[in-house]
Image (cartoon, rainbow, N blue to C red; front, side, top):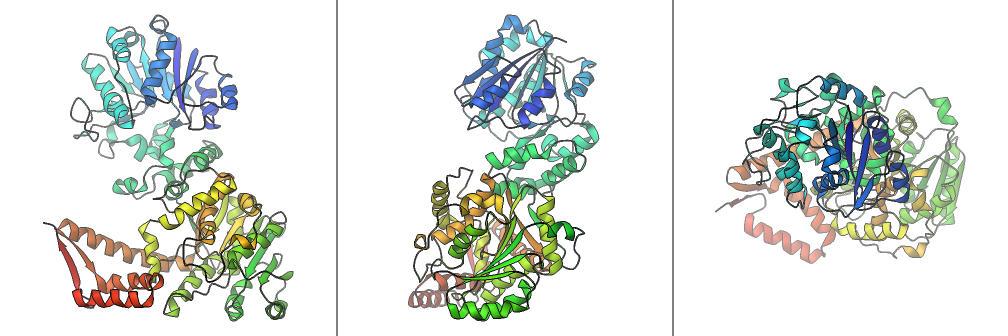
Length: 621
């Protein structure tokens, strides 16, 4: 066939990542003429890449989304030229692939008597979710990321008038409502026949959007050649409405295990363009590692340069930490920082039982563990591949002391829980070349339950300011809490965080004591590691021991049941809060941030109004 093609491209920085030429390399084996339409920017390297495929490159204002980009491509060809094509392909940058050669799809569809076709379709929905579809509902339709039109339709006045007179498109809602969900039924009603290459009629009851929510099924069993880039940053809550949250995880695993697609091309794009928090949720960047069984890579590990960096202020805490320090491999070097010669001598004496190379040095008593890590770590960053950092996690502001003890337990257990666990952590870095930072799970007991609320506004602005200072530009969202080593105990690949450590940090960059409990440069640094790693092409993840995962599961299920009860209560006409279960957690938080007299007044007022453990119910009038 004589085939023309319009490829629509958009990237906010005009960068053409590797997944695009990979797709075009295969696609151009099946087409004769290509027009590439770029909305917004196109960088010099991107232009050079596109010129390998065509000289017909249009760079236009970022207006009208894909619909008006296609209009621009049609205008470049002109209707006289278009009428000479047997088929005209329109596709865009929102798809990745091909997982299987496009030749299969074109050959498969060549035998079907249709006037236009696509790869995947969206099933009918009784409601119009955007409220603008002319039919008042969402008809069954071909998904517009890949559509092919044949000569009968291309030469028709209806088709030409449709595009010549297409209304202005301002947003995604307009594009789907006025075009994608409308086109198929409109031309079908005019008598034009259509079909899709991926047969899914037997899956009607599975999902409205099979190409999104059932994509592994379509690739594995129906040889669908493409998948949506959006899957990696789609709202995880929407996935949970109709799935167990496994969709993207299973897609990625299938592609990688079967070597159907270079997943490095996925990482290259998503780490540059997407919010790390969305990626972490959809790909489940959290690991549960054995604490009693280790891998078989000990000899290879010993060739790696690994260091443990410890900061000690409370000397009495080091005895508690010692059992964890002993879990670091004998071939790893240990560096300890502290503030006085007396502590230095005592630490050297205590570490005499360790087989590792030990170095204890003095640092200023300013900036606490964070300053010590960045300033001492700057000396080590070029010497080691992986560094583990821990410090004496002694929480003094929260009472009773078991609150802080639980926080420390979380940190130590999930960073240096056992010798086998540490070996498995190192294996994890070795097996996942994109893994840059590995953190323990955030604490969720006592006052730390507030971390589950999903807000970090108090530290968002100082983190943005810090990233700007470091010259880091990655997506960051005030309403999406990043993966972070809360408690500043974690593992990292030095290559992933080099930009942070090479900044010219000084003790004067950190506030003097007493430190505020939140909102300082130290709190910004604690939350920036995932973004620093992302900027360098790596991701941050969470790891815990298999034993700790039992505690974590029980805790989160407890909170989930509480949340579901509240949802049910609200659906039944009111919102119920059981202060017997929640008040003590909020109380710890208020105690930490309020002056003592104010705190006591608040608690007494609450008791006078509601009693110590009464249930408050708000009736919806």
